[in-house]
Length: 620
Image (cartoon, rainbow, N blue to C red; front, side, top):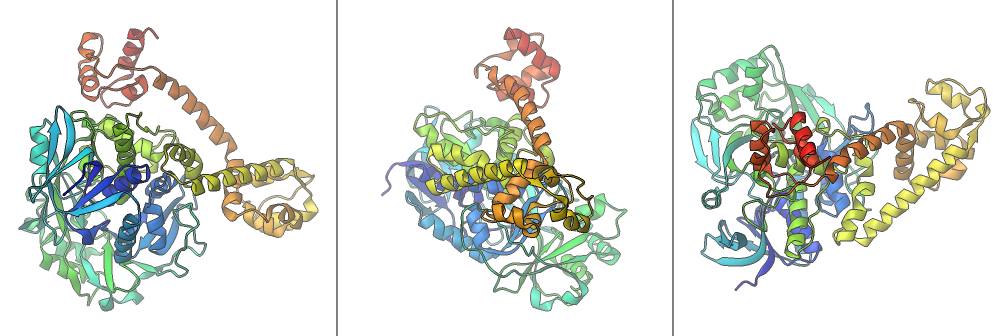
């Protein structure tokens, strides 16, 4: 019935979809196994993509050739660029999306991608021979052979849904949990743990009074995630902001005695940076209100996502409390919020390629690795799909450095530091965030992906055009002198000093009050030379000119740190031989088995003194 596939991807969430796309576009024959074809790329929690650091990840996925950015742009109902008041290293794109359209668009794009087959069934076991994965076995008893397998099981592994004192087996509301994979992996020698996440109630938007809320419009200037020239919606929907109050908090507290979190029924650890409303009330008892974002679920639905009100309290408690929020006094609930507890596998059991150390050609991606968020999952899926294809073709894996991509930071953190709580990406986790901006992800990653056969030629030509145009604009700005009579009125209007002599354009651009695009429109002589360039290219050149010194400084830091990556370590070395290493250092090094001194230096518990000992041992 089934051929032998190159790659089987188990799970069709954000990680699974990107893994299938990556492997298929590179030439592998892929089978995507999912329990439900109607929930491919389901947005299980909020109907939004991107945000702080997450938006940068999505642009990196797009630069590599993935689909998440394209789907997000096609299905957006609102776009905002966050942190525009800060430097460009902090600018983070975010879309509000149509939940149903997001799923259908993803499915359509998958079906139109050559080399991808589908099978609706539950994979409940792996076929392993001689330490190498050879396929999967399904709940129907079907054995499907493959050269590599990527597991992207999300929150489905032995998932339990908690609503007050009620416990329901499931991986998502209305969907059953996945059984068998955890037990199979544990028998194969893997260590597992439990984590939890949650979601808020869904509300009938027709029952809300929006006049009591603050409106939140999208950006007038429309951007997006994808670097490709695709059609995006011309209109946007607004969101709203409201707040909890002391009455809400008091009513929620009445249900604390039935809270699965406070009563110990949930053993898994939840996300620190996205706590439930009851957790916020408990941890931040000094605050008398918390922000609530009221977000539409799509263009043609009245369903509302209540961002900031994630909860697992009894449904009657949720209902009473939410009706005390301004604008929610007469609200009708579609379904209550809930917490979900599920199995994960500590990611220190992986190589940096996301291949497992215990089983050859078996890859993990997404929440199975202890992460949270669509974007983090999609990034891992992209890398697992690429590296699964490379592995079965006996090629070296693609490893993105911390200085090359947020994706590199994400995977490096997971593999070397592990995680005991759901991992979420922040800009603060990246030490080279001036280099890893959302605006230059295509320049950083497209050529790399194109050479591997993932990114299309169209993308590569677009990047070359951008690089050439940016260089031309920078050269013009460095050589073109501006006179005061042409620009002084504009300089006064924006609050900066006049020119007292002819000044090079690049020196003017470095002023914090100056933006290149309005300057081009104001000064005819500049416009004459630069109006032919796209806004994206002008913005890229402006950033490079303004932050040239900072960018050069970070490049110097990268060069210094990358020297440590040149010092190779044997993957099978026994660190117990080096008695001068600390006990913890020996234990961690033997567990992680780093490939370089640089990787060893980033392992939690390996001290600078341990690194010095290793350097001496290597004769460095």
